[in-house]
Length: 214
Image (cartoon, rainbow, N blue to C red):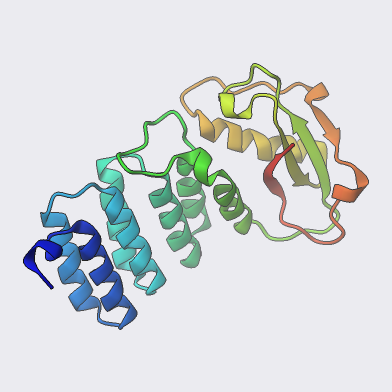
């Protein structure tokens, strides 16, 4: 490999991934040290962290996720830490990181992935912290046309819950996390309706916000 290629950050990442796949973490560490020394953007540390996470090296993955977050807001890094903490059975810490990934008011770090691009994976990860329960109902909530954040304006979400009050609580948690520094959005009762029969769950499901619905 030429010296110029060895200075390419994508090559450094690929080499780290290669050595992790060959169960050689020490050599992967050397390439990550070189990557950091090159002064590359923190978003590449998020990718490196995922490689370590996939190699089941949770401590090193978490360290890289934290390092990227020290440099900026990277929702994917928060999701990564959420997975690490969930695997450790630390559901409260996992939940904090998942909710942090929802923050759309903080500017995303250079090269990072915005919350709306991974909105459904974030919701899925939140649902993964819940235990399936029986007798859930599907509810639809329609956001008014002038809602904030604007990405939700005029759209609907589907929520599984034991009753409408619980559905409102699940959605309120998500909405408050989207813009934590702003007053919470008020959704009036007429925004809610029971979902059609064909959308109702047939058995035990994980309660919470399932996703956007048109």
